[in-house]
Image (cartoon, rainbow, N blue to C red; front, side, top):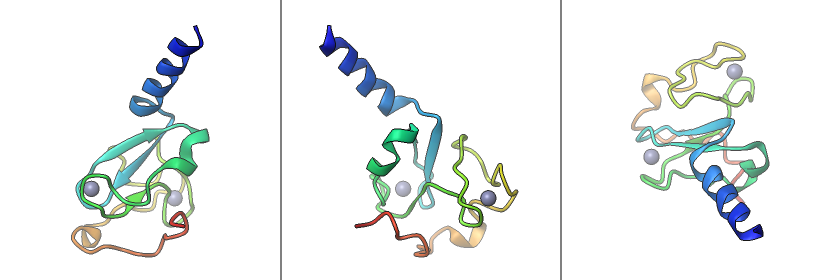
Amino acid sequence: MGKAADWLREERRRTLGDWVAVCLGCGHAQRYFDEFEAELPAACPQCARELRVRCPACDARFSSAFAVDCEACGGPLRSAEQFGVPIRKHERRRS
Ligand SMILES: [Zn+2]
Ligand SMILES: [Zn+2]
């Protein structure tokens, strides 16, 4: 029975999550749970641009894949000039 539970957990992990990381390039969104944040790729699996996990201003996480402003501080999560230009400020999860 452990197997079925593992499978379900794995499946949930891929499709659900409390938080979401969004690609600044193509808009690809990936949901994740707290405990899997460390496993998120630094770059988008589709276009290899930066995957934004936290607000650049206050470090808050986002819960909506369609969020444009930070839920915590109201700052812009992705501004127009970020499209097409890779912003390299948040490299700390690359290692
Ligand atoms: Zn992308
Ligand atoms: Zn913020």
